[in-house]
Image 1 (tube, rainbow, N blue to C red):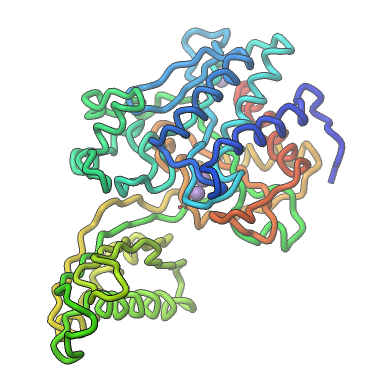
Image 2: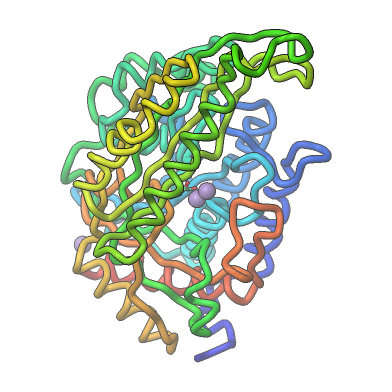
Length: 419
Ligand code: GLV
Ligand code: MN
Ligand code: MN
Ligand code: MN
């Protein structure tokens, strides 16, 4: 494996400084938190716009609220080569998930700009709006809209303040009425390639600098609501309580058990209840209402289709026997997605040409690339992260690892332009 910067056009110091600068846009006392649609997110994007411009890109915001930087190519008929990722985070997340894909794209553009290289194709870098599940419950907001898959129900989803997703998109500068059509129809891009941290331990464990994604899991999310009755916790006898949280505990147990029972089966299956809102949420009140998000991920469309129904029919009697009502509604859905075979080959060739050992591997995390695959060929580059930790403040990569991934991204863009 080479360790020097043998892609001298790239400036690793500038790249790392940008990662550090963008990470600083975080909620005070709650690193690393930069929720899409927040004021902090808009401030980060204002800074990001200056970085796009410094890299010679022309910037605009599309109708879905994606921030797009573009470098024109030589051939006016050529479709754009597109890269990018997201700069929003989960609550108390990491400094690298998403943002390295945007900033590495900017670094590639900056290198082309400094060298005066004009590609045949236009080159675009996109900061997609809200890849992480937003406060409206919908993830991959901007990339879904690019593919025309942000439907009316999603646009009408509301956050805790009652604002609709459509209003949120308009607030950050988008134009929701234009989203009834794909912003980028099938066949409109030459290719999309996204650099991302692996978010798991495989590359680090094997001592490999580069992963080439072969496929990305499908994800279904559901809102699960349990209705009981709020009461005084000191005076209400145990045998007449309708405690919604006890019902929720039963559901959580069955979700976990059902996914574990599939561990040795042929399919990748994980299921999580990671978000829960409890009302009234007081130490001296019987919980009357619980809302939770259930997330199911699998590479099997059949498992994605049946998992929640199987769980709910298995647990419903045990919840209702507590005098509770159980309602489970699907919120969003993405299908398992294969990366385009020639993109897998092309990225592997780029990495190999640079002297990197690499591994073809699946992604258990969702990515904007899933939706960009609807617009044209799609591929993804992974770099390792420390102990595989992600969606937590401990998430870490070394500058060296970021440079490795950015070099592969740069070579991939150049190879795409030649093809
Ligand atoms: C991406 O952050 C995911 O939830 O997989
Ligand atoms: Mn994430
Ligand atoms: Mn991400
Ligand atoms: Mn071409």
